[in-house]
Length: 379
Image 1 (tube, rainbow, N blue to C red):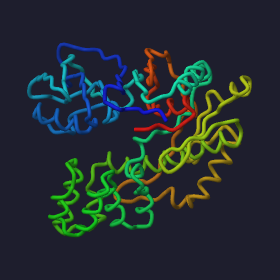
Image 2 (spheres, one colour; image 1 turned 90 degrees about the vertical axis):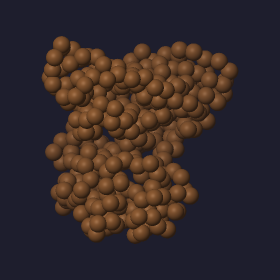
Image 3 (cartoon, rainbow, N blue to C red; image 1 turned 180 degrees about the vertical axis):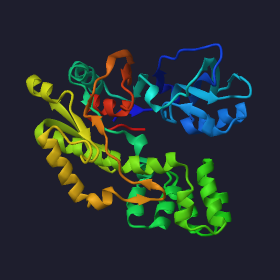
Image 4 (tube, one colour; image 1 turned 120 degrees about the vertical axis):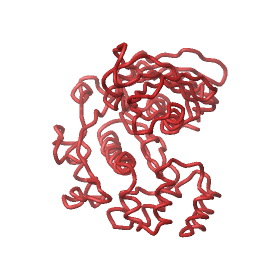
């Protein structure tokens, strides 16, 4: 099993975006370079350095914590322009403009990724797969970063909300940790909020504020309702991403020769062989999240969506549900296949191979790697 992210430099990602700079403007643009920090952790530190609230910093997407990443940010009316360079975080001023950097602004992401502990046979297999993936792309599944607490054997917070189990939702949010020892300590301290706060890992302000709300006697529902909308939407996106992955996985398994690889608590399946004429019919296939507002154009996909939603117990009433101030389900579409640009081997040697490529916004490099290897990844 090939190992990815053995060190942050093994997973380099740089946003691709064209920015027009001006001499003056409401927003200051910076290039933020971070290592071993999540985007939110880096933004929090930048906000402190510049003396502005976090909400005045705009960015185009969340970059993996265990990486070396460069991304653009905007700062709304900073009191002064500051640049700094440290080992894990640096900030370089680029210019001014009149609108913030936001999610839809990024044109793509460029990657340089080193896979280690890869045997000669697997490395040759990967190299042989590159022409196939260049031609036919890869299944555009959502990657690990999308799944929050579920990554550590947890459950979807949306499922607790649908049952009106607000305590369960808070418990899932605050205690789904990779560190099992700390998780057990937090569960033992449940309800003793001062002690709980002391045991908590270095957390974001929303998590700390949620616990402080409970200390003040607010209900679990009220405490969750006080979370920023962006976090509440992450609860929604995690579950809808799971549903969407199920649709695509079922489509691949049912209609194509494929390989299946472990992924969190599930499996992802990838096309191994395909007739070129048949693939042209599905090259631009889009799969809805629900199929309510955006109707599937492919009848096979339409049947699969209905089948999965029925198995999950999701009906029209559930789709209309609102909890903690947000609608729990929204429809939209996502391309079933993504096509890497410039996919090539940069460097290789005994036990490693280094790849470079550019992906569209919202596509996951770790999913592409699974397609190339037809196997799971070691982290």
